[in-house]
Amino acid sequence: MASKRKIATCSLAGCFGCHMSLLDIDERLLELLELADFDRSPINDIKAIHGVVDIGLIEGGVCNVENVHLLHHFRDHCRILVAVGECAMTGGIPSMRNHHSLKSCLEESYIRGVGVENAHIPDDPELPLLLNKVYPLHEVVRVDYYVPGCPPSADALWHVLSALVTGRDPHLPPALLKYD
Ligand code: SF4
Image 1 (tube, protein in one colour):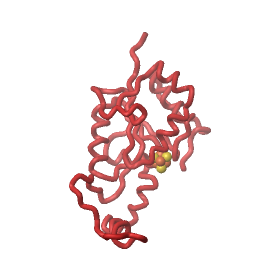
Image 2 (tube, protein in one colour; image 1 turned 90 degrees about the vertical axis):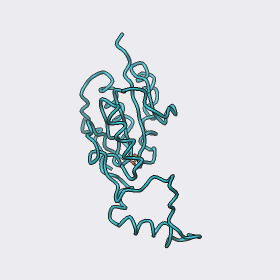
Image 3 (spheres, helix red, strand yellow; image 1 turned 135 degrees about the vertical axis):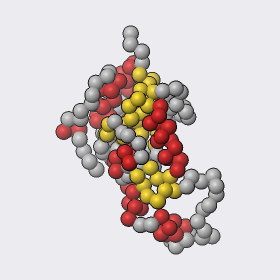
Image 4 (tube, helix red, strand yellow; image 1 turned 30 degrees about the vertical axis):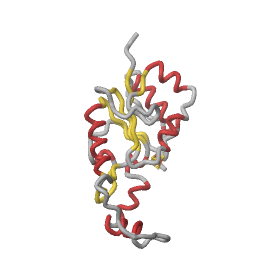
């Protein structure tokens, strides 16, 4: 029997909705687990990639320095890297801040915002530094495949994953392609 594939997943500037959609593959998860094991993922709460994995799924865009480090870590440790969902592909909703300067966004949130008390911009050194804008994954590292949608449907994720774990090239049929 061929050895099982390894899958790692993470969320950068995302809402975990894409991970929820992955869980929505329901009983097909059992079929997937016959062919692959999850390494680092919020699904099993494993915090670090062990060695090199076959497939890395990333939801969310890149909004801070911590995201940049994690994305490079995934690129360096995943043979195939998949951008999952609109945030990973385009920056998504978090990238709406790209229309404004970072200074203006911070002031609107922490100084001028409705109901703000003790107005000041957080500067704890433990907080990851924000980037000047939110970037899609492919502007930071090479990406091998994209799964569009906000979130992509469980059927689309299953289509891509079941192809990748069996060594096939995934091609989403038009019925599973959506951009929202
Ligand atoms: S693409 Fe949609 S569901 Fe996925 S992380 Fe972004 S906002 Fe959430």
